[in-house]
Image (cartoon, rainbow over all chains, first blue to last red; front, side, top):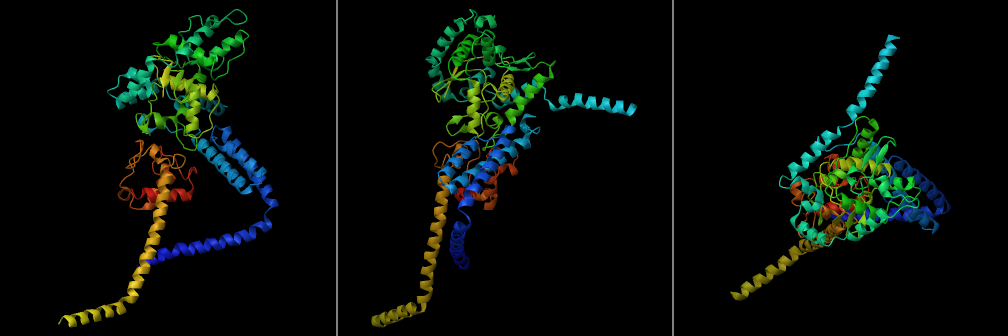
Length: 116
Length: 279
Length: 132
């Protein structure tokens, strides 16, 4: 019984907590952000582009990475920086994951055990 | 001095040994792959693997046979026949490059020692054109697909017999690259070609049945209902790569030509049956 | 006699009401809370189900049978009896996140490691699949 109450209460506490956090964040963000965001985006976009190229250099690029980079740029140009950052981060993740995937198999391709 | 020589000899020996250890023997690969499918499908005659997924499912096979009664690739074959016969500006034609006539699909892909690369039929056709001062064809759509369709039709019944010459280590390296490609996990979905087309062949991906790796190269070009037209093996490779969310390579790129080399070798002994119709 | 009985009954009822007012109230409160919790959990499971079925998200039916689903694939094992197969829910979640950690040759995409789905989406899918 007590557990149920605790379980029911917890999300509310969490919700209050995150609400507070969001509130704090939204108070803090606009102050230091604004102009820095575009620069931050450009930096992230450049990193993502580099990650994509690195993956591509060993045949490990994923299908949508270049598309995300393009969309990110377009969003940034349209002033939608949150969306732009999200897309660029995704492209960077993909570049890094694709590189790791391909490099981990270079000279180490796993033939299924049932085919040996 | 002696030490140096010994080291040099040892080094050379390692060098000579390394490729032999790293590289599989195509012949034993072939035996392993074909035996795998023969054992997995003891009731399916080996020749039937050339029919792809239709070898594995009775109902799909019936639908397919109905389609083959009015082959959708017919117009491509007819157009290809005209293209084959049409002379180049210099008065020569394809027959001058391929003296045995259009029934020659079984000679490709082949290792070309002089060029030091795998030459596919599409590449050979374009090299023929360039030799005679013609512009190469695009590796997509007409006229290439039409010509390939006509050649495939004329080559029906010829047996696949891809050779990896032992006297050129570069040929073995190309085969090995194709093999690596085939078994490499790729794209966001992290699939290799083998994941779908070996152990999981015959299984359903929703309503599609996964075809067997052996037999996948016999019927090209293929008229795919999904495409609404006939297309090349390399177009299908592009589609496969995209399906696993990987960036595809260019048609007739070194990667895809090496893949075709390995992939076709796997079907040695099967008869060509292109053009074919697929879902 | 009857009146006595009635009186007694009335007395008892009154007494019960008085004595059990607090627990009843508590019970009612508890029920509301439980229902709210179950409702929230139910919503998570529903979301998990639609993510599981969505071809652009989990697309689990491409390879897995789920009772009642339309034209599921059969490449992977049927999704049933999950609680018996994974007494710990987090073990199921870990396999959805990256099955190759447990079976290096497995075909299933690493939904978490390759960021095919978000952590939140994986949690919701796990909640749904765990009900199967």
